Image 1 (spheres, rainbow, N blue to C red):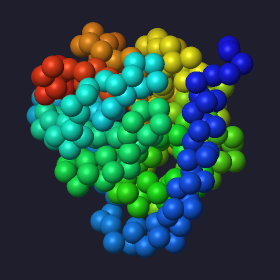
Image 2: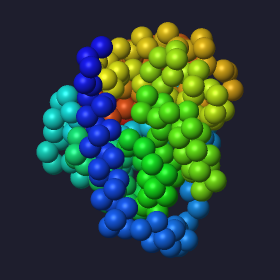
Image 3: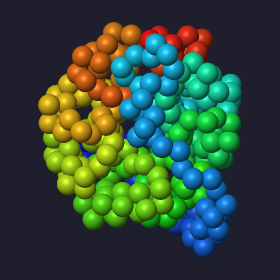
Length: 266
């Protein structure tokens, strides 16, 4: 493993970004914004129940992803609201919005606009390293957040998970290996994500989900993240008993987004 990883670089940048955000918008202002919002939408229920007749066994969390550190800009003409609308119209169960600006060119404005434009649960996908970001997510309208076990110690993982639940949000707790899975299970999550992408190297292997699947309790909602590009990939996940998949790049880059969504879920 390299001494200096991509995840290390992201975390260093993110901590400075959080400090700037807290100076610009105090926590009291975030709490005031939260008071005027409608209640969070239920991600867990969306991932357990079919969103339309004929939908397959693996639910789709479709992601708004402008860019990535490894691939650069994915879709120059990306319109987050229009893309989310296409996801919803063709049967996605939920929407993920990447809000990191430095490495993925996203924003909280993308999340706010998408949340207003669809009726599905919306997940804030980012590198959550501070309780401030949990409040920030809810104030922007997020129905759920992502917590990455590789980026957090045990204390912060539990703190942020419990805080999000207190605010009414669901939490997708992400792991990549056996050690991270054990740490995740210690906080009793409801939704567990297995990221097939190693955030230290950004290499992707769909077999990560296959390897960890037997270790995941049957009562948890299991989400496979990254590495899903074809119908065969989806069928592989269905055979493993995965409940949902989070897909970004394959959808964002698709010539016909609606057709690609239907290919994955029917």
